[in-house]
Length: 590
Ligand SMILES: Nc1ncnc2c1ncn2[C@@H]1O[C@H](COP(=O)(O)OP(=O)(O)OP(=O)(O)O)[C@@H](O)[C@H]1O
Ligand SMILES: [Mg+2]
Image (cartoon, rainbow, N blue to C red):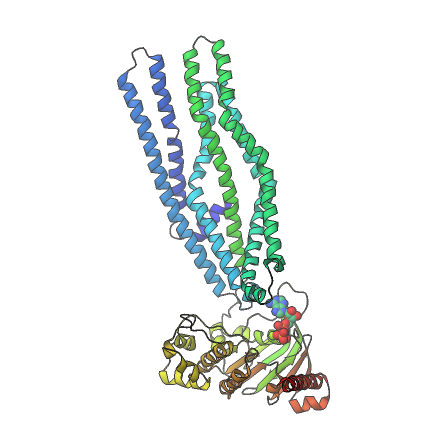
């Protein structure tokens, strides 16, 4: 019931009447569903008891039976119509609200939730809710009313026969109780958990297929995926076993309940004068008992579906429960662009270890700083705190003396360009990709950006130039080419602060040279924080921050740090050796 209330309150805005309407109509239709049986019973009664057999009366009963049967079906269809309308609305609203919330999530949210996982959680759970509302909900009112109607009818006609037909009804109620009990609920949760786990692993698997192929592995190498499938299989198997006995008992009794009713009736007839009345009642009970027992069973499935729907609603809410970044009420404008970290510490949600620990540094406006350090030392984390992928735990990140938390998110995004290791392009035209984030722009500005990002040669090669759609008809770009297009986008955006996270990491030598040129244009006169794994590219920066396990170990220019003979000097020596080693090796095989 809580689920229904939540659904109505949260996802049925403007059409709150649909669900109660569907329930009311379905209640009427299920009550009308009993009436034809009673009319038939009346007809048989008339035929058996009245000597004359009033044709008029029988005719009326027959019409009554037909009318209530057809009327019941029509009303049920109306209920289905309302429930479908409700289902589509709830599903649309669920998806829309989830997407709206996800857009506001801190960017770091997308680290721990891949796009495939997010899509699956929203898709699957919105569909489960849809099918519950559209198909199962109309049975809800019926399944509540039916047992009540059954009790009334059973004792109105012949209490003794009524008691006999309680056997199948009670059996189905017991099975339902079993299902709704702790074990049933436990299984429902476990079922949804393992389904979600299997789905997530499937997404991971599809993402990893290229690696699997290259290394000639089989699906078994994806241990987690394989395990999640076997876990799901074992769970469903256990679930099925749990149902074996109750379901068999139910099926036997519901189909064979006449074997109980008939002997009871025979006993009653033996002890009674009015055997016609008993036969008549027997007839009615044989007609309607299966209807009741089945409607009780239906309510069990319904309960199961309700459990699933409430899990579905919870799962979507859990996913979107991460708090969006709080926006300042009195946002301050950005006037200057020096970046300052003051005693900043941060650990990722759910992690006890600090990813960065008490970091302080200042990049004056127009200067370029580089972050170097071993893998996992916290470089990316520092870079991401500037555009608020996450908010710091303690300390403060500020731009032009203003805490980033006090700057309107839109303004912050406008002032910072972030270039990732592998930039993503949208599957649309190159032009739209380049102008993304800056719709109002002149063709000259676009051409300049294209030229500065060294993209002319890519565009010349493509059949429709800038209007070529990426990802269609064999138009794919290499990693380095995509990176250059992404740089054109950043150059056009012309933000005064540029953050580069290993922007040349995946490029081949030819592309790297072009990317370096493009980066030169992008960073001209800007305040820059760059992360580079090729130490040659940091030699000329204004200052280098050397990170070690989340702390700043050293800071200074290349020459200063080399003189110091500390961590950086060691890294530099190693780097030189590795470069020489590659060259030496290549030379040997040349
Ligand atoms: N999304 C995340 N959730 C939890 N922990 C994370 C997340 N991203 C990074 N970490 C952890 O934070 C620490 C710092 O990671 P970070 O990515 O900043 O390192 P890095 O210096 O950029 O490394 P690399 O050179 O490999 O890119 C690491 O211990 C890492 O395991
Ligand atoms: Mg990194």
